[in-house]
Length: 233
Length: 92
Image (cartoon, rainbow over all chains, first blue to last red; front, side, top):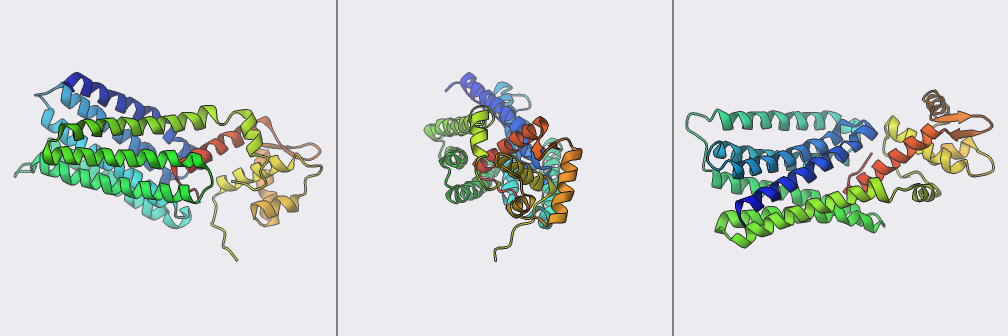
């Protein structure tokens, strides 16, 4: 795959993330619960990580080093924010308010420090990008496994088959990270291509489900039918 | 007895609107039935109803019923809850 195609893939991924970002605000807007802010923050960081990767491919020589590091951090913090949101969503908000506030503040602070380190490297310089990239990929996989298992358990506790798609999307995103890890270890080109393919597939699944929920399945008739049920959701 | 998780006010508003909407289809609205469905004490239920009236989400002509604004709010609220459910997110 040539550079232009890779830039296009990064661009498409970023656009999907930024479209999803608008809908990820909705849980926070509807519930007023700050613990759901991790969703828009996570998708914004994920989208920006693809933008940085695209820019890195476009400007091959200048800023390349910094952009690669920024992309690495943005992606890792994106998955950390998403995992934290899933973790705190199961806790009653009254008991966990302090903890999620501290966690989000800690992650935001760590993100700012990380970006500062990239542009103002410490005196001994940054470690090898390849090694750090592998550690970050492993961290991303751990976050995504946690989110996938959490979402799958939630799916298993419900009778609705429509709830399988988001966990499936997270699993694909997890396999995508695993493919990039393989590529980093053994430079396998098929793993590299597979990683991109799986990532776009997972983002398209998220987009498809979001579109269905907000624009298709909740037409007036279905809504009326839903309200015929006896108990509140 | 299973302990109900604590809910914030928005969730209680959502549950109350949902119940009022489905109860409004029946012959008469019985507040005790609404109270049992959403699981709040009667004095708090009356307070929530007053608050929802002030927000223009329900009206009280012959019996309590949702205004167009209330139906719109409930529709959007339900959509977001469905989205969260599909994402695998809990809302407690």
